[in-house]
Amino acid sequence: MKDKKTKVQFSLNAILNNPVSKRSLEGFVEELVLCHTKIKADKEAIKDIVNEAKDSLGIPGKILNGLVSEKMNPGSIDEKQHDLEEISDFAIGLGIKEE
Image (tube, rainbow, N blue to C red):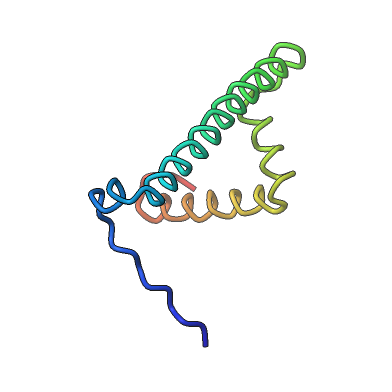
């Protein structure tokens, strides 16, 4: 059996008054800033690629993103289709949608 880690109680005062903890926190903040900066750049690149595909092939972003989802997570199209069929059945049952 694994021992459960003791949860550290947060205390800003304790962190600020401990040089080791303070440097550790500053390091975490810097790492997160780098990650968020990369994510922002990646999101911009994705947007540019989707726009280029739309401009050069006329493919709607929704279709392109669906293909990417299927490539990354095989079976995602079938899962979405199943979910939509289930929602449709509920809508029919509630009289919101006709068969």
